[in-house]
Image 1 (tube, rainbow, N blue to C red):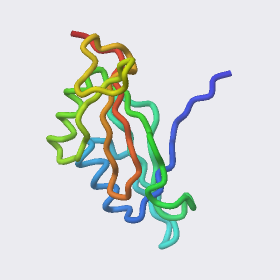
Image 2 (image 1 turned 30 degrees about the vertical axis):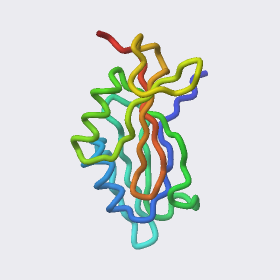
Image 3 (image 1 turned 90 degrees about the vertical axis):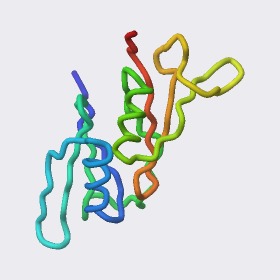
Image 4 (image 1 turned 180 degrees about the vertical axis):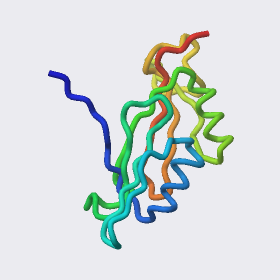
Length: 137
């Protein structure tokens, strides 16, 4: 039996602001923007190349906006991914990687899978992590 993660709910305070951030600044694809009166709206967006989407809106979760932490986006080139997001206007931390002595600046020189990171927040403070896997020189 397969169990596929397809959608993660993201609590936000302003649906239109979140929609603009995720589609314009992050380049996520807009899949759905559906309203049913004033009490229900769902917006679903998907990162390019991902099988899993995020949804936010009105009447879909009672979680407090800004409380989702550490949702990971896996990329094959963390420096290029960071540069693309920064070029779109997103505020992304510098890249860092883990060593036996803790984190140090820059991508892992060996590009070891799951060892290079950068972080950012959406307008509500939900946090995201870029993580490198499958780098090819």
